[in-house]
Length: 445
Length: 165
Image (cartoon, rainbow over all chains, first blue to last red; front, side):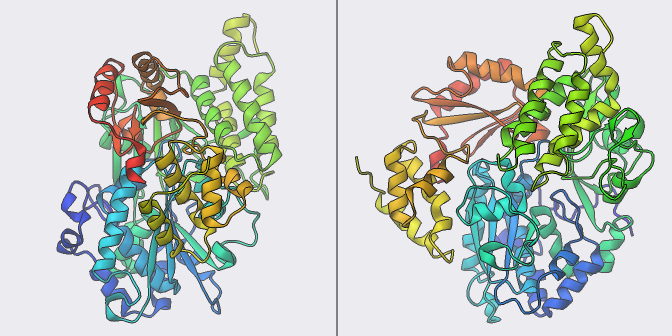
């Protein structure tokens, strides 16, 4: 049965500070699923996760069970790493999840570690999350004291170690291979793939990297089964979805919602509508890396596949008349990304908003690949002069050409993450940019 | 000048070394500790980390200069990390940053003995934009006119980042 507004899995303990202790967590049913899972065969857990259609909540939406299945059967050592480096602008769910329910993450990780036969597991938490780091460290220490982690978990003879590793400020470490390099004590620069981490990851061993929200869903799958979890969702996406709504709505917030809810429902029914009685102009559907939606595209569900394929969403163009090729002739519409929904009202200065997004990517490029290192810097410079009214007549084509030159030509997705919103905003809000150019020069761009 | 770690830091580093197959992954934690104990990551502080973990100085230097929270120059006791990214910008984050600059007499990126002011890239509190983080304390839904009071409160009850290391 599909989830409804008010169905709470991973956010059920929000607002209950007692749940941060083992006692408080156990009182609300905590760690029961770890007990159940430890009596299950590892492959049976993975099969339930496959059946659940749980998809990665960090951005890519990859099927979690399928990812787990990539680990070679004869692997001598396997690692599970939780990506808690949440830093995609507009996204603020993992921080809340860790703050309110750290033991749910620990339980999810312990179950996943058992399924993957991983002994040494790590949580890579963003350096700026100092409050959450303290909460997590305390919870991990208490889980060890109660035998939920350690050399002999709950007397089963299984060893499950968990270490919290704190970052120090770098958006790129949210990219899983950069994260692994950082975890190994290196500069956080992404690795060439293949090999993918599931084959050769942390310390050269097969490694699964999963997002916080993803891992927190695992105990519910163990509890009620993969089929039940799949039924909560929509299409090939099981479960609920946390969205973080920010920007120009009356009631911004972090909400656990049905997978099939539309953007119009989120804005109007959940968030009390656009502020100041205004109309919506643009919506970023899943963190700033994702191409925006315009006001006519908001009846699409925020589900993973819908955002990629629903034909009500216009394809991103390289320039008027030329569709952006995602590879193999596929068009780019947008993606559900990290669940960070940013709403912009009809008074928003769109070129300035885009400049701020480009400033971010220029700052965060790790510098490894030339197209991204140089390209993001140029995108920021040109976007800034366009936003400030000093743009040149061919600046829109220039920005599009730089973005097109970055996309697909870098080791990791940061290059695409800068190129996609650039092309997306130019596709859907071209008139706003042209107006900026005309305003100063007095002639058409 | 040759620097040292406190006994507490040495214990923490030794415990951290148990958690990984080699000492190299402990470099990030050791840098956090060195910054806590010596205020900033001077060349000597980097040498201390290199010596402690048997790593080349160049490696430690490379790591220390990659991540934005490590500072190579002295800074304030507290760091105000004010976000101006998209969600904060849409709710006047730049105006709030300007208010902090005025209240502190600092430009973003500058420090005095008490405060460092940093223009931060998204601190994952977007639903309460505009927002800032100071150690373990989040400043949420900030209005420019509240900034003077917030600064006074931080002076009275500081939240240095070093308290969580």
